[in-house]
Length: 331
Ligand SMILES: O=C(O)C(=O)C[C@H](CCCc1ccccc1)C(=O)O
Ligand SMILES: [Zn+2]
Image (tube, rainbow, N blue to C red; front, side, top):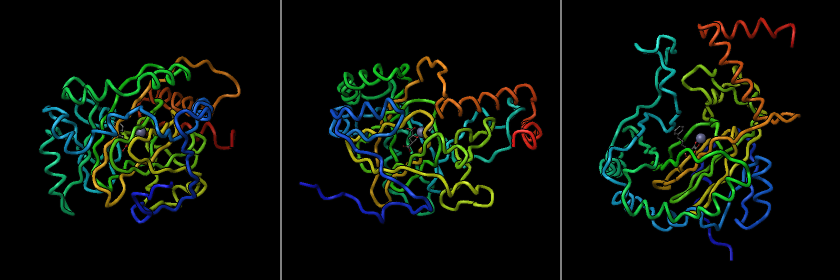
């Protein structure tokens, strides 16, 4: 029988985008491996990958068991939590940094305070988003749940698809309605949804020209410059050609977010807090096979930008040099 959906479309934010559905496949379906080997997204359903998290991880359980350490909590004045790299911000010990006004603030909070602030939240208060790498400060019950993830399945995928080593698992406890704006990561990602519902919009690396990433030297490196809530089509005309794929992940789902794929992630509005746990893998040893894959071209552009900054020193010189090199010659 088809289960009634636990959410409705009024809980999704409205964007000027045409979106296809990301396939949802049962974990034993051979098409899962087909899509992963093509670096294409897929929602893996019905698996035991994060079964213990799906079964146990409620906000109350995490309050009791995540541990008494100070956890990393991002604060934002808006619903958007646009990530930035602190090491690229201009400050006293980073003269090459960029003038930059951080859109979010990072703090440390014990879980009790975080949950209280979530419960007492009022419009006008800073929004909160707990983003904590799983480490040895977590409580014994969480360690037991983590150990009981289906590591046989996970490790099988990691080796079958030549992923590199698991670098980290991030526990994400989000307030309803929070958005992580569109960005890409340089790692393969098994994104597990443990509690609540998250809408994920993904774009292929080939949409690079439509999503206008900040310059590599910018603190918002890897993040799209386009504000999905109010796209500036004068500055970003090709955004209207971006072709996205979307899904709403539910408890127990694992979304494969391929390396270099753009993703925008939102906790449903009026859906209560959400809990996710991701698995980030460094990329394995890659030989350059031709024709190059789209994500390899993105990686090449990154290397060119880094090299130019290295040799020019001044970020303001990178654009003009690239323009003079290309305009009238390559365009
Ligand atoms: O798993 C992923 O890749 C996501 O983007 C998940 C995303 C939160 C990511 C927060 C973050 C981004 C960069 C560095 C450290 C933390 C969400 O679920 O809101
Ligand atoms: Zn990400």
